[in-house]
Length: 96
Image (cartoon, rainbow, N blue to C red; front, top):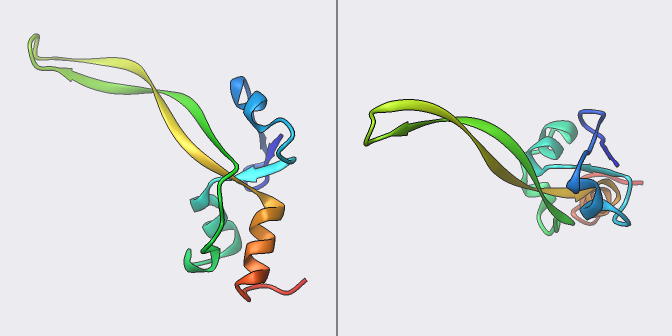
């Protein structure tokens, strides 16, 4: 499973969620940048999965008044490439 805008492979439990849904995916904002859209052209697009990545964030503890780093999950929706292309065709943005 590949992110077609970054050319990076999905890893970990995200692979299990994407299994059988297609081969190439991206997020909404990546699609807008990749196809040079305003976002309105993707009206009606449905995400195929909600994935997660772990990021390290700086957190402020009010009691000890110290900053510390904490790993937290960040969730994001992905769209399948062929679905995006069909939505763009239906909305009259591209012709195949």
